Length: 261
Image (cartoon, rainbow, N blue to C red; front, side, top):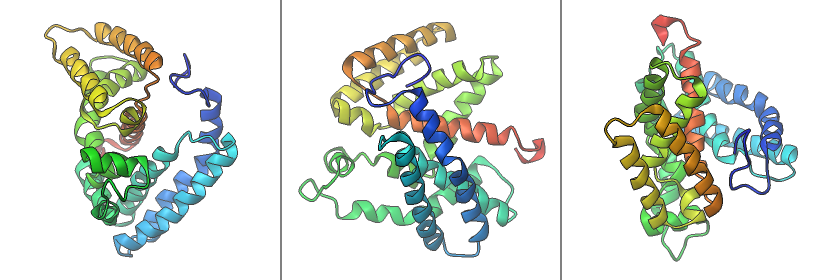
C-alpha cells in the first residue's frame, strides 16, 4: 500500500490511510502523556491504562474508515513507543535506543501471559494458531522483545542508507527488505503459508548478501517484489508496521538536540 498502488488490499487505498491517520493524531499525544503522568505507577498499571486508550483509538480508526482495519497493529506498537518515551521524559532518563528498548520490555511484560495457555486446540485467533503451529508471536512478540528488530536492526540500517546519501523513501524501501528478510511476519503467513514466507525471506537475504549488489539494483528488486506480492495476494503488513516505527524513532532522534540523540 503506497501512492503507486493498493498492493494486495482491495478494501483500502491511500486516502483510507490518510483518513485513519488523521483520526488517530490526538491519540499518539495521549499515549505519551500516559507515560508521563503515570510514571510513578507500576508498569502493569501503566499498560492497563494504555490498553484502554488503545481501544479508544481503534474505535476512532474504524469510525474514520468505515470499519476497515488500516492501523490496528500500528496503534498497539506506537502506543507502547510513545508511552515509553513519555516515561523516560518524566523520569529524566536520557534517551537512547537501549533505554527505550528496556522500558518497552518492562511496559509489556504481562503480554507474555497471552501465550502461556495457547495450544492448537484452544487457539481462537489466527495469531494464536500461528503461535501454536510455528512459535510465531507476531506483534506481541516484537513488543516483548522491546522492539529489538526496530532498534537493533532496522534503525541502524536506515541510518546507514541515509548516511550514504539516499533519500528517506529509498532508504526506507531498502530497510523494509531487511525487515521482511528477518522478522516472522504473521500477515504473510496468513495470506500464504509459513513455508512461502521462509522462501521469500531466503530469496531477499540472498539478494541483500550478494557481493557488489548496488542500492539501485536492490530498489529495482523491491519493485519486482511488490508486483510479485500483488499477484500472490501477499502483504507484509507486520514488516510495514516495523518500518513505520523505524521512521518514527529516526525522526524523533533527529528532532532532539545532538547531545540527547
